[in-house]
Length: 139
Image (cartoon, rainbow, N blue to C red; front, side, top):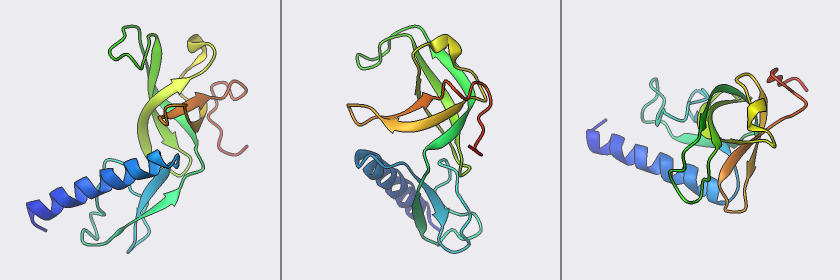
């Protein structure tokens, strides 16, 4: 596969993901040839680089894997303090997102979260106050 073809696949992947977000849908990619779930950093299946990407609706449930709290405001739409985290979706892929909860002090790695969309159509994750530090996908 040429560098130009790889560049196009990368662009198409991000454009498609952002179109789903604009429709308030969180979707995850899979290889159409073998069905392997791809991470959001993969733009193609390494075993089937010419295969198509299929997108599946995610449950929105996930677990925090890494958490950082920003105490400085970098953009007007994100007043400090706010929390950014690596979220592992129930389906497996991980992505980075903003996490909300009434008390930022109560957010910790391992905690269960649910994907939602805020009034500005941004994807956010809401920490589950009842799940505490368990991130349990079974409930």
